Amino acid sequence: MASKENNTPMAVFAITERGDKSYWTKIGVAFVNRDKSITAQLDAFPVSGKLQIRSEEKSEQR
Image (cartoon, rainbow, N blue to C red):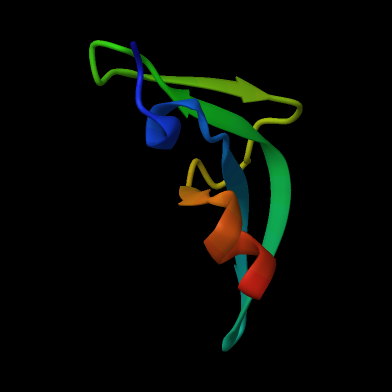
């Protein structure tokens, strides 16, 4: 059986940098599979190609 940690969705963000500021836009969710691989479901694709995947708990603190 998978642990609770593996069932917890993670937030996927696109990071856009403009000047000295970074803007984070939530673009999807990710899950850790039983074999420790990660499945990400994206609603958008970042033009920069830069993604940040964080636990939902940490993303709520932003």
